[in-house]
Amino acid sequence: MKDLRKAPLEAAILFSRTIIIFLFWTFAPLYFKLLNYSGLQIGILMSTFPATAFLVTIPFGIFSDRVEQKKLVSLGFLFIFIFLFGLTRSTDFWLVLLFFLAGGIGSNLIVTPIFALIYKTLKKDHKGRIMGSFAAIEHFAVAIGLLIGGYLILRTSFNFIFKIGMIAAIPLFFLSRYLFNVKLFSFSFQTYEKDFLKKPVIIFSIILFLFAFHWGAESTSMALFLKENVGLIESQIGFFLAIIVLTLAMVELITGFAFDRKLGVSFLLISSLLASAFGNLVLFFTNNLIWVFLARWIHVFGDAGITIFSATVVATLFTKKRMGGDRGIVGFISTSGTIFGAITCGILGAALGYGVPFLIAGLLSLLAIIIYLVSGIHYKK
Image (cartoon, rainbow, N blue to C red; front, top):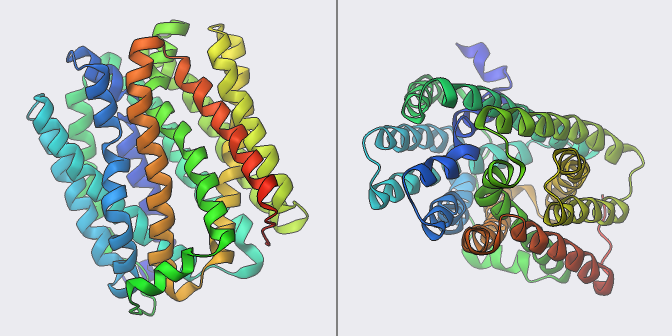
């Protein structure tokens, strides 16, 4: 078993956790609509994971600096088990909300320490390729989850999928006990606060918040947009999104390597925000499958670029000793934008049409470009 400590368990655990969640996550709004939940209720539930992150990412990040990461990750899989077990037992909105809160806690207990561990062992000259590889691994898992989930939903039930995820969480609970250990540190919260009271960090946080709005829009509106506006069924939605996410994974790998070589930070940021904006704005103007696919394909380059930009800038802006807590605060900011997007778009999508959330998301990405250019900030590799 000692050899397991030398294996890339961080990647394996992140990969497995993502598959478990995305067996059903993208299709969850369809499930909730079948249960006759309102647009507001769907928005609240789909914002629960980021809302939980809003509350716990900072303390979990600080814990990652002080407590062995493997203990937090194991506890996370226990919460994931409780989350999925609960969904097999109840469809009552308030109970489902309670179980989603447990799932959000579990997910963040896994992801935050894992990335703290990655950052604490990150080599300076390989930031792009390492972060690009981990992002690609996670998105490959998303694609697999979408394909399997979309297939199983039509042939079995959501309840069956919940049981699969619940069973898969059990061995991961034990496997995570073999994660690598790093040196632990203890800092006051004021120390982390000072890290963020700097102009480059403030501008970075604003850009990330505005960009994260579109993740909320996607979580509440994408599946419904593809079903109601484009006319796809669940398995087609899964296949469509899986192709997009697989492309995203490949672009993240390429972008990560390119970043380490010659790709400039400002060019990466601006071009990525433009691609993201275009890919969102087009959805407001068309329901044609070909145009929607092309828009999402272009949007992929924006997501990949921002993933590499944000991951590498975090590694540059903050010290490794406080990376758990500092990245936790970054996650707090990102999830704040996602929550705002999920709740806003859950209401607007149901009231005005599922293309409206993407119009707003695209305009906010353009606003982020303006803020960056006006700020005069130039981030370093």
